[in-house]
Image 1: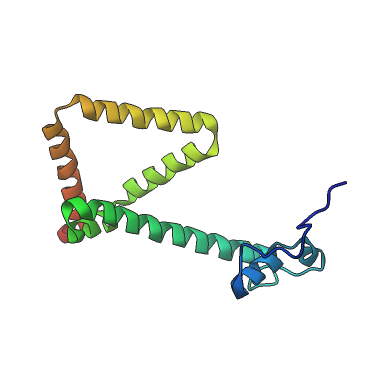
Image 2: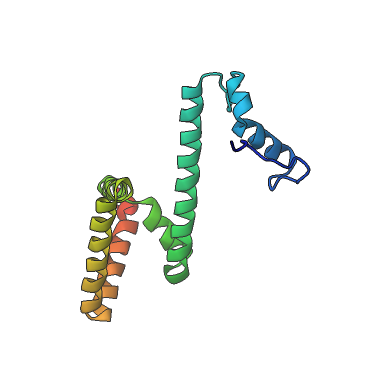
Length: 149
């Protein structure tokens, strides 16, 4: 029968420091059997909600930073900031829905991937100038939404 956990205690852990020790204790099955719960609350459901909020927030912040950086290189930082932060609710919900469909199942991923590929092929079939003009117009409209309110 195979042993669980590390077999050689003399090896150094790839995770070092105080944070690494806490992470190792949180992942240790012995701590879970003793009733200890990883997180600030003693309720595992509350800890799950806290972890979910932190992960989603970190993901959103990093995604927005990457989007601003990518757009900022071509259009300028102020324009990129406006375009990323002034998305409509419909755009946000549509993106969220498509992402859910793509990540829930293999057929969903294939459908979304095929749709993206078709959109890229359609854009490439148009002249480069027209495609760039239409894309820039859509970004400009999105960036100016805040100014109209």
